[in-house]
Length: 143
Image 1 (cartoon, rainbow, N blue to C red):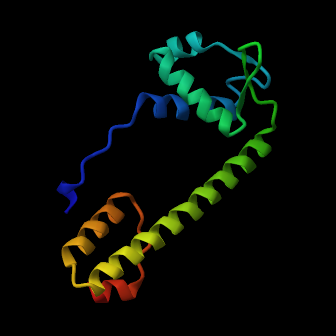
Image 2 (image 1 turned 90 degrees about the horizontal axis):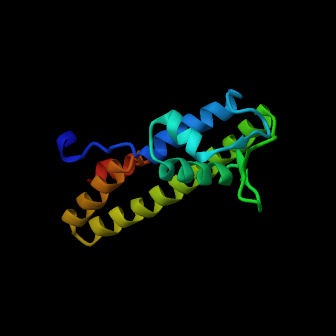
Image 3 (image 1 turned 30 degrees about the vertical axis):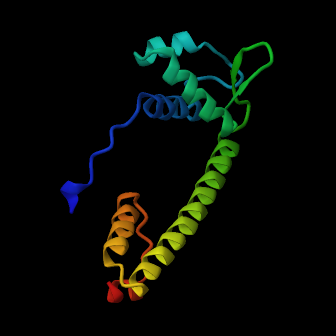
């Protein structure tokens, strides 16, 4: 049921990540610019911790780099290169989601074969709550 699924709050880190990512893609933060966490936190009206965490996530995506002198620099990659990296990341995460969905699908079928409808429903609810909508039609006929 819809009301059984709690609404997820978006974390400050995630909101900071989204804002900073967009600012880098739109060159509001210039290529090669040194990034000051305290200034970004002030602009975003948050503490420095969510900004630092967001920048760490952006480092994984090659959008910023943390240098040995403890400075943070906006990526010198072109917009197209950044989009290519992001597209690869989306593809990779999609593959992970399919793998996870297949694993949960197997758990549901195993539970149904063993007559454990409660377990099958529990896994299915978790599956749907996580936004994994990859359910094959034969599973719908079994449930």
